[in-house]
Image 1 (cartoon, helix red, strand yellow):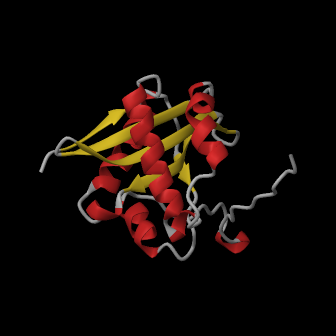
Image 2 (cartoon, rainbow, N blue to C red; image 1 turned 135 degrees about the vertical axis):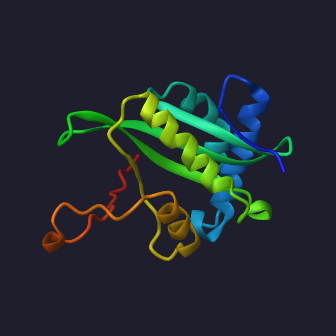
Length: 162
């Protein structure tokens, strides 16, 4: 088994198509919402992502076949006065889960964050995604806590109307 993780080049049309297919694969999974990417996203995502500053992505290749991806975005920690890297998507094709692909993608993100001088990696995960939670814990992630008496951080969102 030959597993490699290489930086993503969305200007390479073949890589862009593979990335979009893997992201859609994730969006079709119950942990990705179950509906797949919208037609709008399929038509516009690659071109839009090429223009997003601070995007860092990679594809995982197992025996020459793309089987996973990681999408990260640069952020900033005001408390540390240093950059951080947020892991937004981790996708491992269902056919190869449990074979180290997720750990290899997370290791790539950590190496990239270190190259960028980041103080930490962040990510969010659904509370019932126990498989992902185990993978993230194995890679050294833990709930965000400043003071145990205050509890752990929650990820919230608010949709904005078009």
